[in-house]
Length: 378
Ligand SMILES: Nc1ncnc2c1ncn2[C@@H]1O[C@H](COP(=O)(O)OP(=O)(O)OP(=O)(O)O)[C@@H](O)[C@H]1O
Ligand code: SF4
Ligand SMILES: [Mg+2]
Image 1 (cartoon, helix red, strand yellow):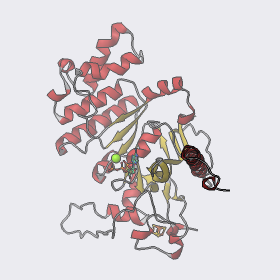
Image 2: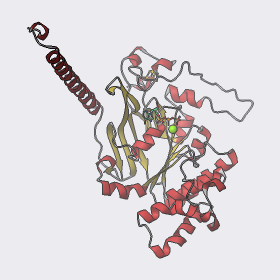
Image 3: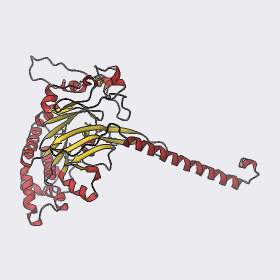
Image 4: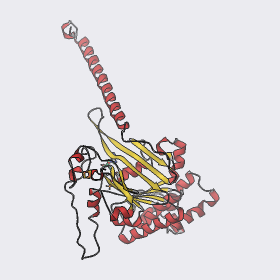
């Protein structure tokens, strides 16, 4: 019998109402937690993922890497979906080489770099093997040691430098923290690193605002180099610089690579810079690596319709040669709601019926040249 028919007074009715509301709220929260758990486990189950073994020729093996960002909504901040920023990226990187990573804004280049460096607490799937070690399996102590081996240089050197620290301190801070050189040798070590990056010893006592954009990027490179890294993610390191300064920084990165056998993941919008600096090139679209291979193969013989369109925009410095520019219709879809099947099908001139249903898998079309497109299905 409902309580309002049981001859109860107002206080009793109010108490019972409150209790019912509390029970409903608890039940709702429990349901939410179950729904979130279900979402989480469906992310972890990845049918296309097959773990790879360490191959010593590679410093970095990225296998079916995923990074999804939860989208929160509703009154109790429930996870209502995911931004699939990196959605199954696979490539290998040989020691001492540079891989260029290109693609439209928002396609997941920076997130790929940051996920590889474990700058997020977790990944959503796949493997990142650095010298054979799964980066996400490392203990806190092991991760600290790895931090010196894997570094990042950002697009905007000014915002990544503390304005209140003199340059010598900025470059030496992490060296001191990780106890990388004996105290007595510290000053000479910093002078040497600065010299390697084209900075003078008297620059040590100056502050970041007293330098030009190019010099500030040299400070960022010196800060990374001081930790004696093996691998550096260069995230648009020259995009904010004048063309002449860009060339100086690219040359510096090349010199340092030769001298210290560094490996770079070089993220850029600028295809001519990527062509200049890279040994291999990866092309990203909406969280996927759609094509990947040796620079010569990608630039001279692009296979994926998206790569063809992207590279058709490179100007040809010969007035007699007519440019066959492929203009892509429509805008890049949202990574929170990517199209079914091939994510590029909404903009692809070669789209077939199967493209709308089934996602293509990465295939090796010629040695070392991988493409993800149904046009190349056997
Ligand atoms: N912390 C975050 N939380 C939620 N979404 C994010 C987060 N970081 C990135 N994203 C989203 O992930 C997608 C990929 O972003 P990312 O910065 O990796 O792209 P990008 O290729 O580096 O772009 P750009 O060329 O403009 O730098 C974008 O849709 C972005 O909005
Ligand atoms: S799979 Fe189909 S839609 Fe996707 S790029 Fe290839 S041809 Fe175009
Ligand atoms: Mg970016």
